[in-house]
Length: 343
Image (cartoon, rainbow, N blue to C red; front, side, top):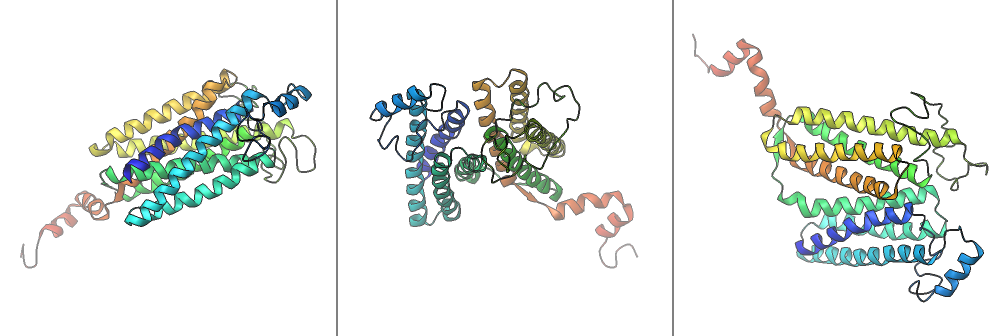
């Protein structure tokens, strides 16, 4: 089963960034039906319908190239789904890693539904963001199944375990905010860095920015989503990046004293530095497609590295208490003296 998990992980590493490429290259509606393309198995079979739709709207979402990108993503995702089903069957048969395999299968089923709704509901932001998070969840579970069993556990103070858990939670929230930025095309709402459109703290509007049931580009009342709402979406993603950075740097600072964790922490720090650099570059360079896709992949790498670190940590309450005793010599003396000693 281990080989199957690794094969699925390698395929997921391709599928998740490629899904971001499809979305960011505006190919999400390259085939406006599901699961086929204009009722056909491939864009080659539906070429006449695609060219006719493109002729009616040359600047629209349908073209032969976009259709192929969309369908290739579906073929790869379908192959990944078959592998995951096989992994779940083997896990139940061998009674190994049943819980993560079952969770993986459940997320896969939800992800298939979200993939269909992404197309049929015409890229509704809440569906697109949920689909992104589902793909990330599949990737993270596969990372956990493939790598976590081989990593040695390290005893650390309980506060470091809590800090690692907070970091993973903050990264999950930041992924959701990043997906919301992308699905609402708010990546360029703030020009410049660190300021936003020349302001250190821009005017924010929350009433429409995070309304989950609205349509793409529209406020709940049917009017166009105003620029202040897009700025709000973007600005909160930057604040989320700041929170993640503070938690991560604190974890690096506290955890560096543990020699067994230094390589892992170094990888974590490098992944964070690259991800921050990609985020800033996307703003300053006006969101070039390769950097935008790399930023998506970097988020997956950063979350995976943090999640694996959390899997390695366990609290050492007794050791933490022993380290505290020498600060008070009389407690240390009482600790060393047995009954009747020193009398």
